[in-house]
Length: 389
Length: 72
View 1 (cartoon, rainbow over the protein chains, first blue to last red):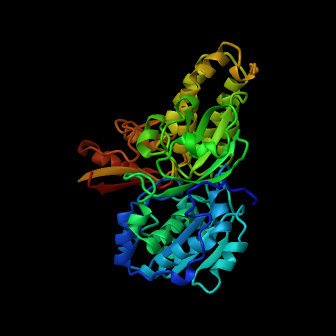
View 2 (view 1 turned 135 degrees about the vertical axis):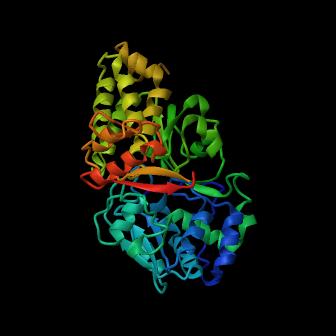
View 3 (view 1 turned 180 degrees about the vertical axis):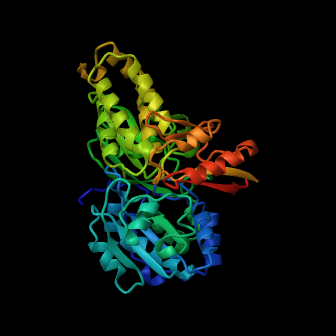
């Protein structure tokens, strides 16, 4: 992958020197104390506090398995690919530090097909870490699907009733952390919690990688402080006539151009029903029809369904069909009502986050682009009116 | 302690017997799959529906249902 990085003043992850010789050997109590004090949250999408996850896996009766999730199934995201190429030793440091502290049976770094494994394989040399490259797809990185694939089963999500933290790879308690989260753990172990908290906000400390894509002059991966203003993170990529930004990828939500000063925190993004997720920021320009874009995205999401759960299997194609009709200019005022009804119907049902994430994206599209929807129902598309200047 | 009803969506095929046995708890969607009326992912089973819920768990042809005790 040749995704460029965009140099910013925040450079904890992408230009990290190889400190491997000085990797501190922390016991579980010491490591947990540091990770807890750091306030680190998962960088793979859900944003769950890392210390709580580590603690629950470590409490299991059997020796655990620690898995680094480098699947990066979201097509708009390239930050793990860049991280694993530029700073693979940081990811492996985090994996190894956790595996040692937890007396893990196995430590596995799982890479998706889009990730060039060369740098990670070199960095893993001489470490007790298995590096494996697996089959991909949008949902292959969901942790139950990843555990299934690591155990030789198809890469499909399982019923989440039994958590992987209780029974995952080989039936052992399993800690699955995103590749970037592991790199952050390595930095916390080496530099301490107060250093970690010197970036970001009190509620959401540290830095994050963001993938900036879409209508920008310089697409690429940027590192920025948590809690940065959306506008500031986008600036380095030079957005072109933005009308809205999709925050969080295909399972994310839109922030309109009028709100680009919003800070990328849980509380500031909540009114948009958005979250930082895995750090995807996709810029939509004013000459791209958002409804056409959304219809294509939902086609893709429907195709990527594992086809295991009825609400997803039936609901997503239904949503895609009606979004296409709306985008094409079918003047049926029931269309947005029907799309909203189906989005609500699939939410909270299914074995993984796919129906909920897809419904969130669709509901946000109808909400943020409601004037655009009205225009389509009136027979015209605002994106097709050419700019004067 | 509350009793909650869990659907394993990877097993459920929309036969619909659960929604017939637990009409106060479950509706069906456009495609015949159960929908929790309360909107909770795993709805609470009130005591008066306890027997019906056990009946639904036993009668699901795909063994997709289970009851469990939850603190909240």
